[in-house]
Image 1 (cartoon, each protein chain N blue to C red):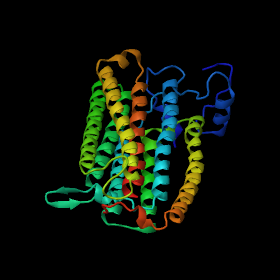
Image 2 (cartoon, chains in turn blue, cyan; image 1 turned 90 degrees about the vertical axis):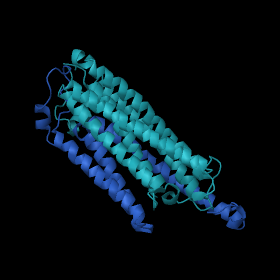
Image 3 (cartoon, rainbow over the protein chains, first blue to last red; image 1 turned 180 degrees about the vertical axis):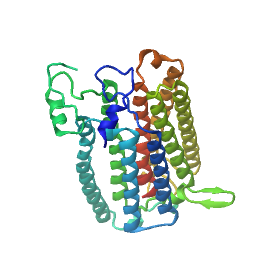
Length: 131
Length: 226
């Protein structure tokens, strides 16, 4: 990121000492990101529409999801132009969620196999009306 | 800012990280407190939505009954054609468009363009209201088809609980956002921020709005597409 230009473009009349008060960037940046988000959403939808399955399905879903999330946070929410102290304070804590997801997937796996063992056959708990 | 403490000017340097966290008074140097607080609120909200999505993962992975196929559950028949997931796709585009107009509103705010800022924010709120309306339609449709938090005719009973909890909490955020944006837009229009020079209020409202869109990205991927 070019901070020299960011600092140079700060607007007049902003609070004193807040040199990044004016997040001023060319309008074109927003239109480009907007367009990209549309394209990525269309691609996500296409994954479902064309019925991709298995590895291709979930890897494509995740790729498009993370690209969209990254564009929104970095440009629309101006994260790329913020100070490192703020970036780390906001973006590092969610990494703890990886642990939660890991633990819960172990738990789900355990519950799943327990149910298979104790419900004898899966058919025993099938609903009467089945899709 | 304190005159006695060293504050690194280069905002991306490790030096700035260290100096921001080690000098007294405040951590996020040269960041408006309102913006820092909104970010911290959004961080806590991230954990709330993550808990919902993680519990959804847990119930979906542990059930022995087949999970309802969202592609079919959320299909609509338009002009005699059965299109999979179309309502959700339209909702996604509506929400992204609202994020686009919000980003432009923030930009015009810092250019001190009062009318453009206010009207773009009102457009954002209108798109948000459209999104909530479509969600109300989706809920009514599913409830009419017999989807309940404790069961549904399509498969695993946990589907209803996850659906209502996740989309309901998100829809609640969008609704609050529509009210929030409308209030700020009217204040912009009245010239409140021209007088006190605090146009960052628009950016802070924008952060909340973009976050709502961000959460939808994850809900769309994990709940509707997976």
